[in-house]
Amino acid sequence: MIPVLQGSNADSKEIRMPVAFPSEDWVKALMESINNSPSYAEAGQGWEYDVFFIVEPDGAVQSQIIYYMDLWHGHCRDAFEVNNQPERYKPVFRFSARAGIWQKVISGKLDPMQAMLTGQVKVKGPMTIIMRNVRAAKELVTCGTRVPTDFYV
Amino acid sequence: MWFFDSPLIVHGEDALSYLERLEGRRAMLVTDPTLVRLGHAQRVRAVLEKAGFAVGQYDAIEPEPGIDDVRRGAAALQEFGPDWIVALGGGSVIDAAKAMWILYERPETDPESINPVEPLGLRAKAHFAAIPTTSGTGSEATWAVVLSDRAAHRKLGLGSREDLPDLAILDPGLAAAQPPRLTADTGLDALTHAIEGFTCTWHNDFSDGLCLKAAQLVFEYLPRAYRDGSDIEARTRMQNAAAIAGMGFGNAMAALAHALGHALGAVFAIPHGRAVSLALPYTIEYALRGEPDSTRYSEMARFLRLPCATEVEAGHALAQSVRTLETELDSPRSLRECGISQAAFIENLDLLIENAYNDAQTVTSTRIPDRKDVRRLLEALFEGETIDF
Image (cartoon, rainbow over all chains, first blue to last red):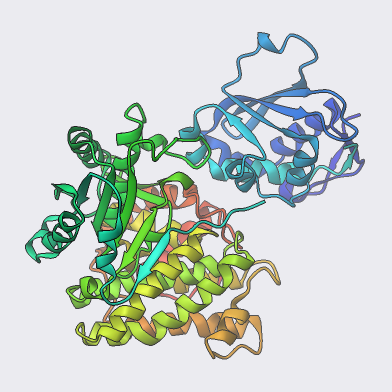
């Protein structure tokens, strides 16, 4: 189920129904949150790369889950769970972490850049691009914090 | 999870003699032409030679070094093959030498891609000692590397935790030659590190005390060092303040004043310390109007014995203290006072906004401006107007 956004100011829109994380519904809700965020639209202008968000097994998460997001100049063009044959995709960036680490990032308890600096979130991809787009990364995570989430971690 | 990093710090009178204890065969002294002329390079060479090193010298580092400068320096390192790199100078020299060190150990590295995430494997070839001759950047105690992208008129904030110096030598005798203007600019840089390290969103228990002490030292000793460069106590305490502030913000982060300062410095060639400290009181005022309870100026103001009954009062008192210190040091308090014309400001405003907005240190501010607010901040900085938005 994709939750419904409400409110007049897009950045303050809230999502009514909690969504389970990790799940494809959650990444779809994140996509909607991104596409309703003027702040991400502004910060992500220079980002034109697709990414894998990889959730590594941790606690209740028994096996690896991969989400694909196509982030393009301040918008998310597509987002879905890669159920099989992840090798078919060649995203520019791969961000991976244990489910519990993602939970901390998504709930705003762990700064995404600090998570990368400490190796809690592992990154594969050209770091130069990330260093030039920390603002976009920050706003992306802020969009994630706006998705009311039930964590199954 | 977070880290606390620090080099071995040898400080105080005659600290330079510690170099005699280094073990190795070949040391490359990296410095600049001014320090050669002042005889400081020769002093360091003499100590290294006494310790048995074959000493090479690369003294072509210019202020605000760029990628090409670093590549040329790295080639000199490759040719000489040192097992110690000894950087003698201000932030420009030390930052350039760090980048040269990385390229010496990892020649395939694109300097612009130096980052704190990917491992470098430094120290396979050489160790690194930093000997600051200014008291401000704190580069001797951080892993930050700031290089200039002159073509794009922007500063590159680079660095890896691995490029933290192994050794920092704070010998006050080496700082005594700084002219007053350099003393003021670099000292205000240390103050900005201290205040932003304490108030940024990455502050932590390990960095807080360092930032508080550094701020206190700068307020007390920078005016003395500025007025009388031969005041050795003031020089000593300012050297300590710079390194302590470096450890403070280096183990936390800087914030919006640095983001604005980087943008201004790259476009208008304003010295780094002058640029960031110029922005500092404006960014304090801006942060005060952010989310309630998001700032922590009262804690710092209390330590500095400034009015601090409320957070707002403390923030304004701190901003005013910075401005008062700038006045005492004959430092500009607006871009206009820096000699920037209105035409030049307007011509470069879009570039300034873009670079400040995207600076990595914008996002560690307690209040993160959008492009519209960055524009308003810069306009206020130009005119010297108090922030009221």
